Length: 154
Image (cartoon, rainbow, N blue to C red; front, side, top):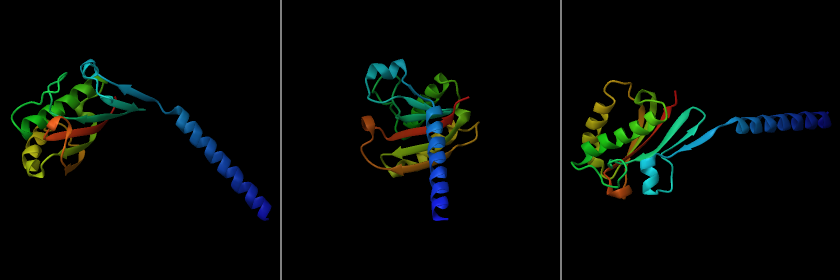
């Protein structure tokens, strides 16, 4: 009885391992870097697409193709970061309406309310994605906010 149980257990384990390998082999991973970002020479992609999900790298409120942050504080930086995300997602054939999760990183938690105003205006006409927000220090380029997001590619 123990030998049969062991044989069945090993057979099931082997079948599961083969299924996992097949799943891994069928996953498509694509990396996307815009021409503007390529010129800046950062060591990461603007986005990675895994099957039909777009994972957008953290975006700050910089003018596209430069490391210059937009002036005016947290509100304009939030809007610009979201516009940078929108540009990337559009280049990949999707839209802001397909964003389902955002992660917002603030350099100062006291900017939370003003950031929310700009964020709310950006997502005014679409369903608002789920979101996490936290504060830390030392964001890229001295930015007040960095936002990354996930979207469905359609």
